[in-house]
Image: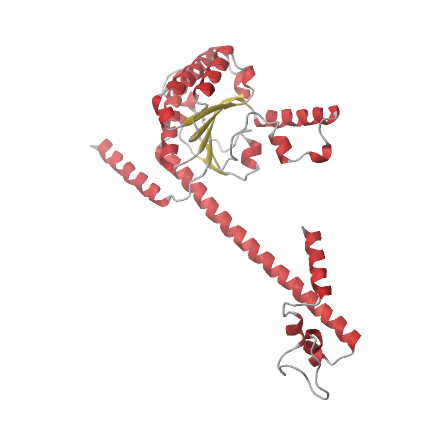
Length: 342
């Protein structure tokens, strides 16, 4: 009875979260942490935890499809993982091989139009895993509705270092002009990179760090980050929806902050324009030796009648200068400052 009540409550909460979400990230990246700790907590071996985590991965793909996420990157195996003992690595490599082949042949994968891509230093993996990667990429190459990146033998710092080394080598060989190096130059030398920049990083297992994961595509895009306590095999749809909600809240806050910055910039520019107008008015007064009250007529090109003031008696000098159609000298000065500011 208690289990049924808990299930009803969770389903109601899921519906509540779904109703709150109307802004979905395009690209979600997940650090699947906690498989080994999950296994130890249950008295099992590490491979059992990895197998339980693989089942969670399949569920996450369905959740992404339901929400309309276009790209998912999973941190399946880092460069640091090579330091683990062989008795743990071999079963993990077996699991990666089996799941890649199983996934590539699954009907639902092709029904959902999932394309599989591996990112990382794949050549460091055992041959059987490399063959499975090639098989999965080949079998799903024509799918174009959803992209699944599997980060294998991946390390963000190594990726950037390798890109920098490649650029230096090309410059030394004379095939690349140093002045031509830009963001696209770097991206072209990264691993088989994600199609899109990362919008949201999710990490399970309780640790609050991004562990050298996609620094160029996540940090460079100022991705939102969601940390949660459940181990990866325990990661639920509720937690996934909370992560999406975090992204949505962050995006709303970011848009508000950008609007405030834009408003502040407009105010600052208006203050500069006013100060410039006042300075020009002062110069005109001194050069033309006119009465300050007659300045609007002089600036507008009208001539004040003799013995009297032109225009509205209530208008002052600033209103005439700030009236939009300024003399060529004014617009040229503003243009020059704008270019230097850019």
